[in-house]
Image 1 (cartoon, rainbow, N blue to C red):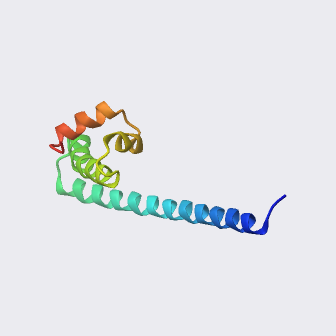
Image 2: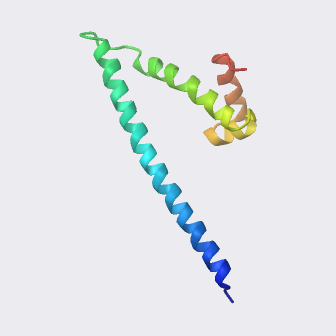
Image 3: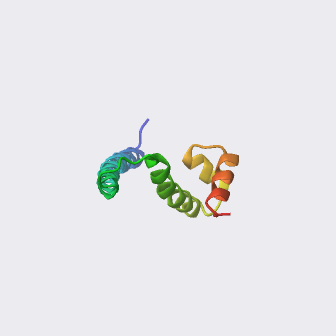
Length: 102
């Protein structure tokens, strides 16, 4: 038997999830476009020279703020941060040391 209040609660929760998924998709698009623009600016900065270390350069710029923000959002709980990032906790600790975040 379904009670009206539980139906409303389930529908509200489902609407909330749909809204969250929509916002996440919009954010993903915005981040993607921002990255494309930044890469174009970076590429143009090389002028006539083709970059030879673009991956290292970009990852060095992105990884540190990513790790710092996730760690902050997870209240500096390294296990939670590693889970959010989808990496092993020891890998997270290694990266935190590399970026002087420990």
